[in-house]
Length: 165
Image (tube, rainbow, N blue to C red; front, top):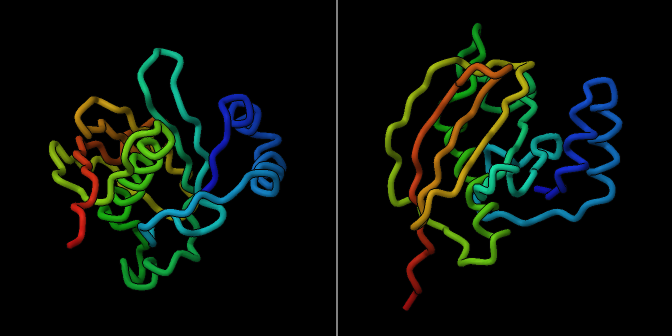
């Protein structure tokens, strides 16, 4: 997982230079470790842009969905679809990274998932845009979309792990 500033992301999203800009950014930015494993673990998975121009604290990510993802082997054999739970996991991971970058305690537990809606299938070849906004008290309003069409939306509440005794 790597963090990028807004200027780098805007430059990269000029579609002609996308592949070169992503490669340059991946070479020049440190990896941020994340406890969660699956949805965003591949190196071609995510660009992050902390903060939004409207003043809300948020982050934007892009997951490049490829047919090589292991979950496509059985979901479904003749019609590959990204499992909705993995889209939610990607949104949770992005929200966790946003929390970590804001300086507060890093959440490790999902307290609740509310108003979850799956509106579009995500298939190989899609560029899944992930959007999370802090709403206070550990709550995040999240949305995943493909080409501005909402695939998944939800409200997530994350809390730090309880201390171990």
